[in-house]
Length: 202
Image (tube, rainbow, N blue to C red; front, side):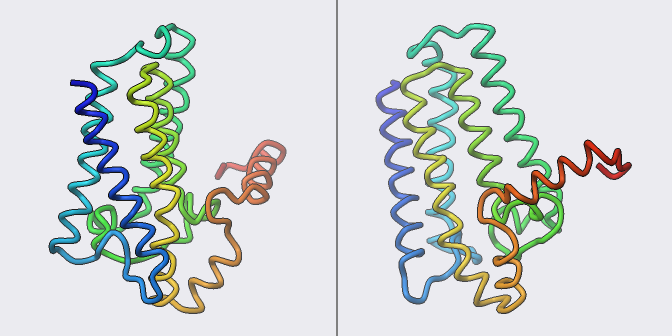
């Protein structure tokens, strides 16, 4: 059963990576995921469900196949996963409606986590997926986790061209100010400002 789950998840991941790269390398790319209901939108979410469903099923059925699950691995994986989930919740809290979460509305934000990263959901999902893989100690789930995180890392390259076309100078200015994944300087300045100034808004 684990071989079937891994195969399904891997095929879904390869499909998503291929589609994302195709859009990213296109001379006139559309947004990915598609912003309208249709066949492409359905295929996008079918692949997402194929990856996620296989991953969670492997976590539940093959835990401990790579190394023994111990309190240490549970603590480390749990902390990483909880941190990623917290970033995802923080990111989702900045959205105005569910359509943005589903990808049906093309928009960009500059507040909250978007002050520190243009793509905080990449970090959040990488932490959540990676943390769960560490926690479970499953060799079957680990390569699928790598594929899922790799796909999330590629997504901005397919999304940003559409954002540049839609928002023009406004987005280009934001893109010049904030790093794609982690704006280390802003993060360091923010943390040091909170630690040493005891600001109430930290």
